[in-house]
Image 1 (cartoon, rainbow, N blue to C red):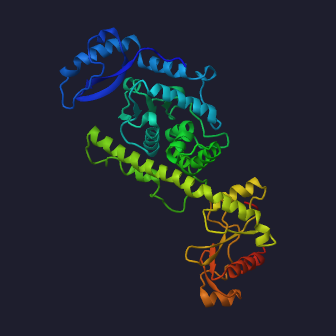
Image 2 (tube, rainbow, N blue to C red):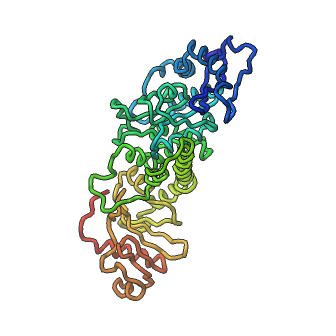
Image 3 (tube, helix red, strand yellow):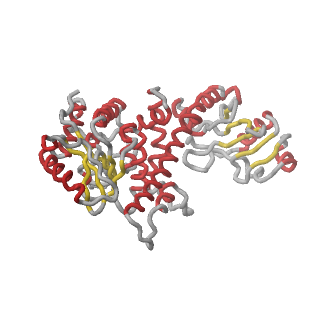
Length: 435
């Protein structure tokens, strides 16, 4: 794999009282000088002027953007050079090739991630955090600016620059020509978070979970996007989750909580203080992202085997095949939808039986995907009743309660919970369409 021969060093440019880091190729003009010059905090412009003159002369000979392009392109397979990403799900092979290019590049210089200054949003906060999860960007500095000249010197740029070029680590989505989605089946346009995840999601999951199982990585890669990233993409691009007007306002979402970390409109803050706020936003978004991935890997994924076994035994639970019994409670809903779809049985399961942590047996209605509406609810005559009153109406011993909405009920025994599900099924006379 051919790499550029000039060694790369870090110089510091003093501008408006602040030190700004960028890289340049080693040249003969630096003979006899220290290869790495650090600009001390609180120093004067004169103390950096010599460094800047040499850096400027060297930088004019080989532009940084051209240098980076040569490094990345020489590391990438020939058939992938100068090729933009397709709209479909990025293949594991192509993502791995891009990541290898990043690894070879990272050994040559320190890291920097650029994003826009001013008001920040959830997508770039998460994008920066995800990049820092990769070993190659673990100690990367965050530069918030809209200066094109400065952005051109940075290793990776997200959410600014009007450029999407994964080979050059440019991940903006604001340009008019941009219309990429996560896959051909998706309609939600990607944000900077979605772009970073699309290209490095598998490696991020590998870093968070430690797994190298390709089947697991592929399953989680799609599930994490569906359950976490897509909502951030949609929010940043102004795409409503539904076609209907919401019945209430929800100000508790992750993007809303991130937005409240911005500098208040009636408060003056320095750029450094705003950067601290952005770091807090990164931590909030990233912590929830990591927790979600770990939850899928450690809790959601193992539950699939439990739900799959219950599905295969559904006719043993009841002759109708409309209910399943879980040997132990687990996160079952998304697994059930997937398993139904895989077995051409979408919408066939109406009730799930299990024993909760307190020892009570539950009968829970299966709701339609992405909705609170149940395929079949427990009868309206039962709802809100408890104990003896509920036993009298149902004629079933051991009844403890039925929720006012009819989505769940309880009984002291498995036989009682099963009887409640069977009776509810027989009382449902309206046809139920598969969902």
